[in-house]
Amino acid sequence: MSDLEKVLAHIDADFDNALDRLFQTVRLKSISTDPAYAGETRACAEWHSRDLASIGFASEVRDTPGHPVVLAKNHEATGTKVLFYGHYDVQPADPLELWEGDPFEPTIATLPDGSKEIRGRGASDDKGQLMTFVEACRAWKAVTGSLPIPITLMLEGEEESGGVNLPGFLDAAKDELEADVAMICDTNMWDKETPAITTSLRGLCAEEIFIHAADRDLHSGFYGSAAANPNHILARILADLRDDEGRIAIPGLYEGVPELPDSARKSWDGLGFSEEEFLGEVGLSIPAGEKGRAVLEQTWSRPTCEVNGMHGGYTGDGFKTVIPAVASAKISFRLVFDQDPHKIRTAFREFVRARVPADCRVEVTDFGSGRAVAFEVGAPAFQRTQQALSDEWGKQAAFVGGGGSIPVTTMIKEKLGMDVVMAGFGLSDDRIHSPNEKYSLTSFHKGIRSWARVLARL
Ligand code: BES
Ligand code: MN
Image: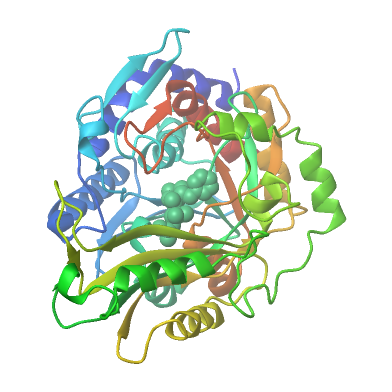
């Protein structure tokens, strides 16, 4: 038996223990956006650091002004040096009443077709995914006494909440993070049989706006029409964000957005994407957004502007005839190609201010931003990862675009000058960020086996 075969057999034999370890981290409520969970977020970092130390990494919990970063290193082997990134923080679990079980008490559910899934917040995004890589390292270490290549792991605790402290961390730890290539396990497969390497991600620009009108809530009978209503002002702003063709109407927004190159269009057309199935899976059937553009093009290579939350006036039970003093909305832009998040923020603020009467006031809060990123796949690390994934899944791994954002990817490319190979085993129905998040048991098992093969190929 080759070393790799022994490692794969070890992974199969140790799988129940791998699951137990995943359950341990899912139980820790590392909700980075909510200060009430700062202690448990740190406890989760400490758990991962201890776990990595137990398999021979020199591992530390590094403080930042926010949540800590776990930095672990084992450079005993020679060969291609890999920097692996994952995030141990998770999204809030609410609305809690929509979960079938406790989001932080992971379980394994068996579906009618006999397939199994791991349920819990972070089961997929990103604890299940990052543990596929850790378990592959553990298996190599257990079987051969060492890792096959030098590896550094960096586990972030603020990915889901803007990650404002990561750029500073990367600058300060630049020398320690030096490697030949970076790898991330935080993306999806093409479908449940076809592995994928994501070669582009969209950037992000997030902003909350508050429209302040009168200095108190008013009786809508005494003041209606005469006093500005911030809900109406906000609604107008939000409605104006897109024109009838679905284009974003903010001046200058499409600066730096070229038409998709023919090569990418051809390659994506070849994937056989079904818009009907994609929307059907979430109970919809009519593509929204920019007219005349395919869904895949819209989500992978066009900017979007989405209202993620809005609030104003009385939203409790019953009814209250009130004109609120303030209304607010959380709005995010996904960015592509060379769009500049700072220019877009400025243009958006001007767009908002131009629609607010002179006796009212706008307040804005910056919730972070990052540029889009894309990689050419000619470098050996992409090819070898593709081969390793294809070996494990028995199907050629696809190169795909990505609609989400993983801000560190752009920073690794720009600050550390490395390619980032994004191989993930999530599925589009994992319900990440939603109630009843799950990770398929097959994703977890074959994900671990996939990384074991990637390490061998590298
Ligand atoms: N893992 C996701 C992003 C993702 C999922 C990319 C599936 C490709 C396929 C990531 O954790 C995430 O959700 N990121 C946030 C970042 C934001 C809060 C800064 C996002 O995209 O909304
Ligand atoms: Mn993630």
